[in-house]
Length: 401
Image 1 (tube, rainbow, N blue to C red):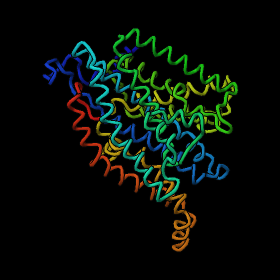
Image 2: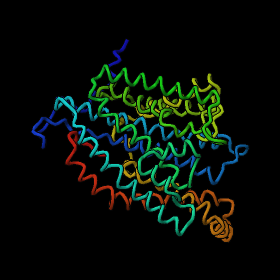
Image 3: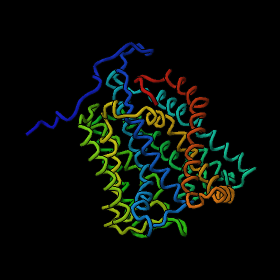
Image 4: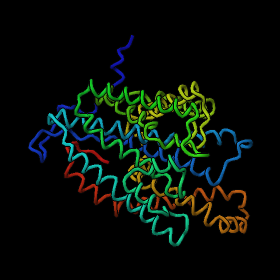
């Protein structure tokens, strides 16, 4: 029987360090371009499902396309799991090199990475709301909740708000996770494993509570935006990082494709069979306890399926799109809203005028994607990059974030 360890390799030794600004040994650079590609894949899942919010796919005519659009919501758990995996890996490398974790530097890094673009987009939409009603949050209560990164709880208790703002709920969940992760990482591996197993237990206890009929607001379950439901993906990412300990699969491309296909299959079963939905979940307790682990397993399989993939299989444009995926995520739904809501009559007339009325929704999707990429690229260069350069001053494990 082949040694299972032969399928894993360590790309960079934790014992290779170079001098750093802290007068302590600094870990070797940790950057995995394949994880940028995974970010873009996760974004495309989300992009696909948000397109159907305003331009639905006929389930009778296109059953498989409709089914794939339904699982697009699971791109968000991939973002959560990947974030937890990377941060845990980097914090572990920092602790191995220096003997500790600089909590203050961690918070500074997260602030510089998340806050500038988040607040620019959020308040940009607030201002735009004066010209295009419905573009941004329209009340002080919403402004305050999203400013304090509690926007997901506002939605959980009140229902969805203005469409272009809705995706920002996930940033609130991430920031809540960031509050505690450096403190958890200082506990040590065994304690960290125990804590994450406890987090998984709490997540599924909350899921069972919803499955038994808990609904905080009429017509909206709030399950999808509940932090405790999604903490399972952060726990999964942290546990995966602790298990791999810097190693990565060295599978061939056929095996990786099979793993990714298995991830998608798990998601299709979770959605179509067990009813794990974002807006109107109707799963029973047994269905929830079967379906949510499939969502978690699919996200983990997505990560291990691409982790360690050779650079020759990674198209440079996809790596770049993964780097700007934060901007893509924050802005794409605004373009969908413009195309399919505010300017839908104009789009329809233009397509009919050139005989492309049947392709209206496809053309609208292409326009939304192009606008999103252009704006995200501009924001990456003008807003994100300056703060990323500043962030490096507080970085002890060189990486590309």
